[in-house]
Image 1 (cartoon, rainbow over the protein chains, first blue to last red):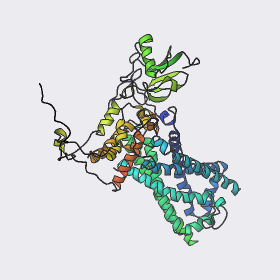
Image 2 (spheres, chains in turn yellow, brown, green; image 1 turned 30 degrees about the vertical axis):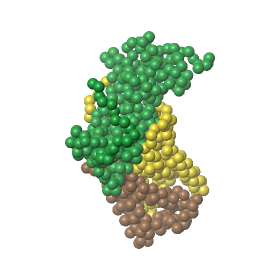
Image 3 (tube, chains in turn purple, red, yellow; image 1 turned 90 degrees about the vertical axis):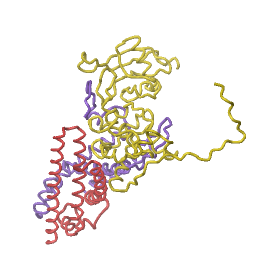
Image 4 (cartoon, rainbow over the protein chains, first blue to last red; image 1 turned 180 degrees about the vertical axis):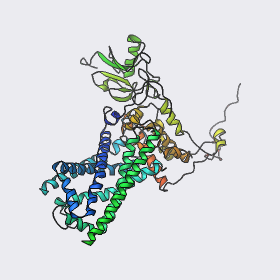
Length: 145
Length: 127
Length: 275
């Protein structure tokens, strides 16, 4: 790594959260990370909890009883909503990060139309669909009652 | 050591697999009251009721796709965690230790999940 | 400019004197505001009239050299290219580009960015070294082939994209948008044959894998280079290369010289030389 001189001035994790005057995609990037971490944490515990089904009915019912409180039910809804966002934004990222939907190299004429502008409709579409799924998930819980 | 070019490609591929399988799982578990999926929640009631668990456990489709989803999701999720941690610029020794820890956790949970999928398949078939 | 435009502007400048200050501090300057004034004009006014010790880098004052990249009102911009009128009527806050060490006042240490840039071999790599050193003609390139990389060749290496990137904010190993964009500029150049050599570096931690398309680099680029686009296109090439779908291209050769050249009959010969 090259030696640097002078006073260190990296933004650090603040640079993930707030560096000033951002576009939508920057906030979506942060939300994608947050939902991803939330999903991973839930998932690791989920593997352990659902493995109780191999032991029979009584252990399974005990395990399900242990995670049936209101806090857990709300948490599961958050997991569902997080998945909806992470998956739909993930589709957009797979497309965009393989170079589809970002446009071809062009002659830059001010005001510049960048790849961010070109893929903006994908981003909005992902957010709208994720929102719709989150609403459906909420309706499902209410209908179960 | 697998280089990032390869790991990232598999990360994307695993994401697509998860999209399909976890999308199906989420639909069964969280959208069943709206969509009324009787084929996959045949005993009625909640998706997590024991009867539904057994009914699904008897079809080979579920244990198979659970194991596939388990592997893809563990790889995708833990590679994502590795990315986030490595971007915080740990020392190279700490990077090796973190990679090893993530591999151990991933393999361990994969084994646990696969064994319980196979065991519950056998159990469901016997009921 | 009408009567309601303020006659003065307040500059809030981030100062840091190595050896004297432990941490950077803000210093306020009030200077006259003139029509068409840029942020750089204000800095010169401060230096000439108020505080000669204020330091920054600038050169061309017309947005082509890339020296004056700074954080103006929270966004990475070129000071010479930023009109005060586009900043609104409030305080003009000027700070050095983040994600680079501060040498002094508004001067960032850009050396790590140039080191990353050099590590990605930003030059044409070809096997015919003899032709490059003693050229017999020009390398062939059609306008369509030029379009594949021309946009990315407009980079002036100002560092604004590096300041805006969330990954560069925490990770010194990640190459950053400018070096990666320039690596793609050469990979996409039909005259270049260096993809395999650059791939050695690009397949690892210094590659584009920690770009997650936050897109801020392209939003702040003062020349419309769109490094985010270059990086995503490069990722496609590298993934296709891994799954063996990439069509390797041979670098273009020397364009054949026209052999049938005849003078048009109605054009007279040049007169005899007199010296």
